[in-house]
Image 1 (cartoon, one colour):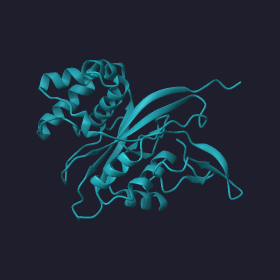
Image 2 (cartoon, rainbow, N blue to C red):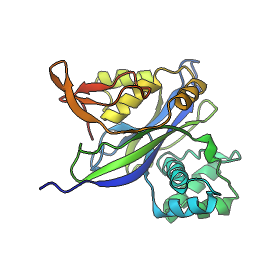
Image 3 (tube, rainbow, N blue to C red):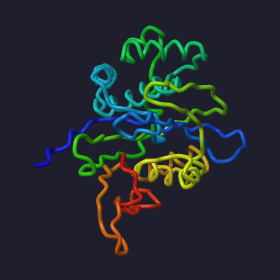
Length: 256
């Protein structure tokens, strides 16, 4: 008998920046270390599980808002800081040196709240735009990540960042279309949800377009299903959620 999978709440941040070429916006991605149990060796957006400290800070900041939603946004910010050194969604600009120090302190304490307080920083969580929620129940046996995706606009061009070198082995900025092209060429590996999100993001020439699209498509939990498509087994998602591609042959889909 197969035991029900443990569902783990998680959050991911899709950060946009302006491309130096003036072309489509670039997105911040990392390549996960191959030895990791989930999505090892895959290119993903920064993110991870919601921790108790995220929930504690959310309870402090919620002010009548949904605590779970606030906790997910906090987790998306914290994980991005830890994995990339980028400090998103704060109410004032900080220097590269301060960002580096803040990153070290977050890694040491495992909590964002005390570090923000020590640096006199305040979060602007409204800067995170809800984009998607994926929970691939039935795709694995042991654990499932119930992940909320958020969009964030960096509002600038070149930014120097460094990979954390623990969970991830590479950090890079790339347009959604270029990421898909590299995946098709075998230069990047992307799991099924990441590919679908890249296809969706490749439709937009700016963050403002992506923002408007997200607002026009309220988030609904996506649970991929296996179904027949043209006589071939495929991994599918529902229509009408903003995704231009809603299925992929099962034997080609990377499920983490």
